[in-house]
Structures are given as structure tokens and as C-alpha cells.
Length: 262
Length: 325
Image (cartoon, rainbow over all chains, first blue to last red; front, top):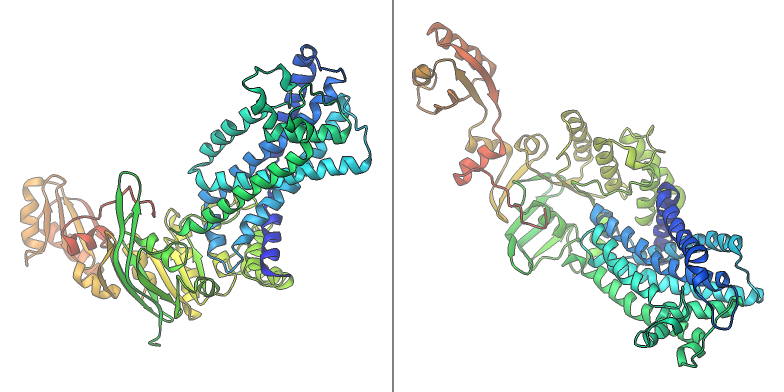
């Protein structure tokens, strides 16, 4: 096995090994998402009419999944910032290992970790009445699309973890970026209910297009009254957004990592 | 002793810039460590010790100057340098959520050892560092001394010929410190080259063949421990007399050459001790005969402060704003 791959796998192993050792991280990530499910499915849901009808809970769950993926990048960022402050990144940098391994291993591990969280959330979704009405192929395609997005977001996390001076800053910064992103989207409410100024933002938002793409792939209700470009081509836009995020943040992260020695 | 230089540095300069301040952490550091010897970098916090080590260990790029480790340029041949060195810092850089064994296995794999050999090496090091019982516990549960030993073990995974130890005993209790010294001495016996930073003259004295004193990013003195101590003046005896009025009288009797120093406020008299314990007995006898009451009497080894006092005429000061330390 070439060194970059082997070293990346060692780092991924190490990152995943931590998950059961700090169970509160995964538990809180899941609880936070479940709290949103309860809040929207049982508290606000009754007040949110879906244009064109359909089950709000089936509409909601893909939004919850995508929101969780976006938040997973904060976990990446916190983990990386923690490694930076604890000196373990220095240790890695003093070893004759492939430098890329630290970043590729971390991002790979975070995709695997997020997949685990996603499985738990889908099971909770089934409990509250979420169902998949499409084929196995479409279902798998939706999951793949979400994992691809997770991978790109993990690079955003790596970059944040590298630039922020402390773990606390990362946490604050992450929430400041991800929260508005998920609320200015169709994750919880149809974008038609938003003020007209915000509508285009919400429609082009990567969270929205990915949510809509997965809704369609799962066969869940995906109402859209407008015939704007994003609502017509959610799958294409999800892929493009993900590639764009990756194309910006992966080189940024790598460059920043290489510049630690300055 | 071989004459080959394991570490050579010339004119290292490192400036840390932030928006408002500019700190010259290194201001032209020259170093040479011969193969198989131990160099102790002695200095207060913020003097530039850690910055020097980080540059030599390829973690940090110098703004000016060149450095070669094992004959390799730290900047242009950094990956080759990393194969030759082991680094252990003042903060134990191990994964606290992995067990000791897992940590060592991971580092061994990253040193490109094959899986089975990595496992063997981890076991071997756990045994060597007295961690075999704790090997399967998560490092988070380790005491400070154990973590530091694990960190040093991690530095040795790749059997480096050159070891950088950045304040290996800072923050350790005296017993753990002695344990750490034993471990370090074993490395020296095995013929490895060591660069060790410390704030303790005693530690440099115990472990190093040669000492370089660092202050404000420069090396202000170098020599063997004995040479430095001659400069500083070796051990001292401190006597606190009971009656303040009789302090100078005591000084006249004990430091006939006028080498003693007096502190009126604390009623303390400090004299140089050349005669060891016998001199202590002598002091007690002389003062007893003169019926000068003694509140306290002790041997004191010269500290970093004494070194600085004698080299620079001022006490060692801490620079808090330096990022590198």
C-alpha cells in the first residue's frame, strides 16, 4: 500500500477509535437532531401546511438528515482544533509519514462516523413515520449524495479547525455559519413561506438543493410552487455545490496545513 | 568521542509577527552537537529554547540561518530528517483517547513499520518504560509522569539516533523527574545524540555533556557544567542568624575573603561552599563558639537565576508574549 493511503487509514482508524471513547460527542449529535425532529414533527409541524399536501414528517426527515450532515463539519473542526492545541498534530508532523494522511484520514473517518449517525437518525425517522417510497437504487443514490456532501463539509471543518485559535472559537464559528444556513433553507419549511427577499437565497442554498434532491430520491413530499432553476434541478445542483465546496476548501485546508511551519 | 556534528545550526533567526507586536524569538543562534553527546539548552521561559528545537525538528521554518541534522538540511530534506529524529515535548503529545499500546502502535505504523513489527515495538517500549500494566488503559487516565514517559516512548518508536527533548521534566514531581532522568541516561548510554532543553541548571548538570545558556534568542554562554559552575561559583551555604545586629559579625568570621553576601532584611548570610559538608559543620562550630544564634542553615545549589545573575548581572526573566514557548 502506498504510504499516503496507509497513513491515511491509520489516522482514520485513530479518529474512529475515539468515537466510543468519548460517547457523549455522538450521543449529543444524535440527541440534537432528535430534538429537532420532536420540535418540528410534534410542536411546529401542525402549523406548517405543505403546499400540495403530503406528510409533514416525511417532508421533515430529509431536512433533518442534511442538517445533521452540515453540523458534522463542526465536529470535524472541533476534533482538528483539539488535536492542534494538544500538540498531537506536531507529533504527526515530526514523523516521516505522508503529510496528506493527517487530512485525508480525518475527513474519511468523519464520513464513516456521520454515516453511523445517519443510520441511527433514519431508524428514528422510521419511528415517527418517515418512509422511503422509491427503489433501493434511488435510496442508495440519496445516501451516496449525502455522504459526498459530508466529505466536502469535512474539509470545511478541517479548514476551520486549522484557522481557529481555540476549540471554543471553532464551536462558536461553526454554529454561526451552519445555523443560518440550515434555517434559510427548505429543511424545515417550504421556501414559499419565506419573505420574497430571502426566497432566492433559500432556493440556491446547498442545504436546500440537497434536501430537495434526497426528498425526491426517497419519494418523500417535495412541494415547490415556483419553477426556479434550483427547484427544477436539485440533484445536479447538489453535485455541483459539493464539488465547489470541495474545490475551495480542500486546497485551502492543505495549504494552511503546509503553512503551519511558518 | 567522535567529532562528527550530529546537529549544526548557524545564525538561526525567527521572528513571530502579530498585528501589533514583533517578537524576535531567535536572534542568531549557532549550535553544534557532536554525535553521541548531550547538549543542554538552558534558559528561562521565552528564551527561545522551544523555538530552536521546533526548527531543528522540522516543525518550524527559520526566517534566516541554516540548520543541518544528521548532515541533512532541515528545510530542504525535512522528510529524511524526520526519519532520523525523535521529538518529545513539554506537553505530552499523545492521543489521550487511545491506550498506551494503541498510541505506540499508531506512531510505529506512521514510522512506516509493518503491522506485526509495530505491535512488537509497542510491547517492547511499554516494557522499557514501565507501562506494561497501563498499556491497555486510555492515556487520559495516566498520571503526568506516565504520560510523559509514553510521550518519550513515542519519540523512540522509530529508533532515532537523534533525540530532541523539550523540557522533559517540567511540571513533574521529584520522583517522576528522577525516573525520567534514568530513562534519558539510558538513551545516552546507547550512543544516541540528545538535545535537551531545561530551565533547571541541576538537570543540565546531571544529563548534559555541554550546556548552552540561552537568553533573549541568543546563546550567551556555553561550556561544560563544571566550566559554567566555576563561573557561577558552585554551591552555597545560607545561614539565617537569630540577631540581626550580629549578621555582619558572622559574615566577618565565615567569609574572611569577603566573598559572602548579606541580606539585612531576611538576616541571611550566603557564602560560597568549597568544602562540602565539612564546611557546614565548620560554620555551625564557628557560630556556636561565638554564641551567635542560628535560625536556619542550608546548602543551596546554584540555580538558573544564579547563572543569569553571574552572566548578565540580572535575574532570569520570563517573556510571556512569545508564542513559541
